[in-house]
Image (cartoon, rainbow, N blue to C red):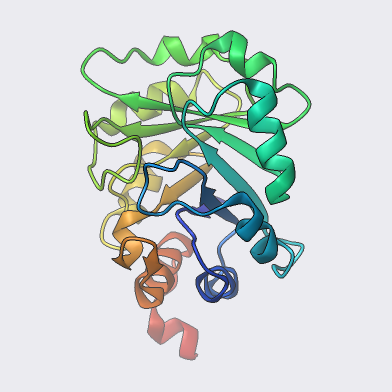
Length: 213
């Protein structure tokens, strides 16, 4: 079953609603330049109230040394770290012992084979935007994701996924998980829970009519 990651959570109400809708993983953005930024200490308050079945992830973008990332992850109480900047393979290696996701951006120069260089538990492949580290809302060539998925332990697919296209994306790429953020928002940092439910239903193969039955 495809794992569903909802990223950019900033408040308890959205976190609980995403969990209740069937999300598997919830991501908190600890990059201060993001409109979805949340203080690690505030994220910890949310993490403490989530069901134990929900995995929590802290998103970091070139956040100092690996020790800095580990310290902030511990403050937040998240179970995994996602490195969404220019972190090197050796940087990732220094976080061994934690579940580490390395985000890579599928620009014109991206080669799927490069993902093999990262000693991580999973790779997240996102679309490229020169001005954004994530939450681009853009779709990229899924054939790159299919090729990458054959080379890494686990692949999360991101980049412009929403209720309208996620079923097609899953069928095409067959990833370990999918990640969505900006496409499920009413405004930056606030989730549109109806779209979250539609997104999850599309992945699980349900429709509102089937749910009522």
